[in-house]
Length: 302
Length: 331
Image (cartoon, rainbow over all chains, first blue to last red):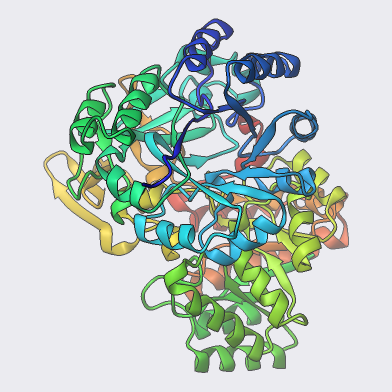
């Protein structure tokens, strides 16, 4: 019998207000997730909580039995952002998820989780980062099952693999805020307009194909990664952690579905079908199959 | 300030050097570099000829090895590092941590430059690569403001290189998967954004349509200039409003702020465009050479030559230039 992977809840990518975040994390405290990533990964201007506020939330979740990890910004530019990052690293209680090598540099040997933007594409990179304190890694979003499995098998001792299995996929990061640009505002006059779009701004092609989602300085897929169908293969490879994106309140239902499959109470295909109906997004598993990320089992999504 | 120009082939390299480049950068004919286009790049033999030519003219040659190998194709990148080192190039431009580790261990004398594809936007990130792999220069992503470039230069343990002219990546380089989302292939995993094999142009009743792997990227009216269908420069609908959602077809032109870059301590100005024709490289190199020389002579009174600026605009995507992240609207 394989050890069952733990489930993790990714950080909330959108700018939700304090009330919505509190309600979300109240649900998280009583959810199937063992690991919870907290913090802002997209835009430093968003401050739904102060540093102390995040810390208090982390302690509440820890006392509910959750392992809390602080996610860090994927794009570091301003000096103030590095200052906040240093405080986060030095919090003394919770590990960080490094989403830029600057975080690893500043962590100076402290253990960290390596996020998907670190571009860990090959075993040698994984080895180098393990020597710097990496204890768990995530594959780049575009990496298929073959190369991911090869990296997982080649991982150094005491390094775990964390695989995203559900959620919109992060695709690109810019200094420019596309939500502000859409409203014809300069970034320094954004008025926190992204808070008006708790599910991001949907981009359609001129043929009305749901295509991308704008989330401030981040661009994500409009399709939703759904690897539930592939859980038997993933379980066979003994991946240690499965991550679901914290981008939709339905993540708790999705987490339950994954847990039910892990417990052998539901077959993966049925769970995958049920997961499709949790949100209005089309699902996709193209990247996992070595195909374009927006596709599902080789079929373009309309 | 050094002028670093693109060399897509031997002719382009010669033209760049004859037009005033201090250094040229090139790639091998495989996915180990981020301009893996058919008909482009260098075989071992042509690379040797190129390096001899450049060194005879006392110019430098950098080799771009700036994509990300995976377990199954690691040997291709390893061999490319070995080949570049044996060719006695002046620097290797690298993005992947594993490749840097290999190059540093096996070729300790080989000078390493951190590619823009390594996404280092802070001095701390540069320091990470400098301390571990002794990188000697960092190419900064096209997402930093002038104030941020100044800060990175002030704190960086090594030289910095910034983009002076060429196509504008509006996303952080090395972290953009828009191309593989649509085609399966990206700069990171294949060495090309929006590879030509996926591009289709179709005349329709509604205009000229550009598609990338079937996805409609843009549709042009009779009077409109068409642009290459990269995802970030397409026209889409958001909230019912049609338009360039991320960026319009436009090129980056940093010439107006050359004195600021010089004062910040930037060591080199890079011209994008290994995929461009030798004629393009000649014109851009000459204009940038003149601008840098003029700026170095007297940065206080430097103003970009209007004929040069007009020519750069003509050579740009969509005949438009921008200061990109150096402009206020981004910050």
